[in-house]
Image (cartoon, rainbow, N blue to C red; front, side, top):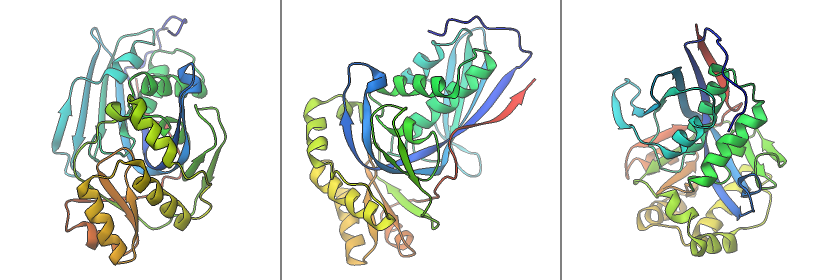
Length: 296
């Protein structure tokens, strides 16, 4: 719990944005505390993430929405235990409103993005005085406690293609800014993270599948991600079918972790993926979480 008392700031609301994250492969590290728990691994921080608006409220509340590009509400949730836990760590009562365009629970790192943006925004609204590292640590702890992610929060501290060298949010992260073309994705529905990250058996299979190499090029990243997906036991029939088609057309592709979907690179990728569902165009992010607005 944050110890400082909230001060009168004259601020009515704060908006923050955090990019999402495509995880390619990872090695789970289970420590004695959330700060020492997380994952080593590689992924891509994506520009498409979550915008969060927080405002002071008499009663705590949450509204999480997925919207179309025409701002039509496609999904709406009012129950998000990780966000509720996070809000409870601050010395004021807030309403949290999140907005994204990508499917929720589909392996795009949106849980981490929402937590990161919310932590940074509430910190300013409540005048809690936390450092960026402390805000990040709270978001990471919320993910770990609720089994919604391991390394996404750490990755979303910055942009690029990330390689996390240790668990938690303080370990060194090597970042490559070498993917200039869009990455395309298709999704077949949720693959609930808690059921996997809360299962010692599943984590054991994932750990055994970890390739143990740093991906110094995009081609190496996709190759290692694909080897990991196949060895992890997480491939679904739908994902397997799409990957086989990508192989036939020599398109680099792998499974979204943890999501029931595929992400692929190359000009032929959208044409292949469009035969299986809505295609999402993703772009490598240049930077991580940031404050986007303060309303007096």
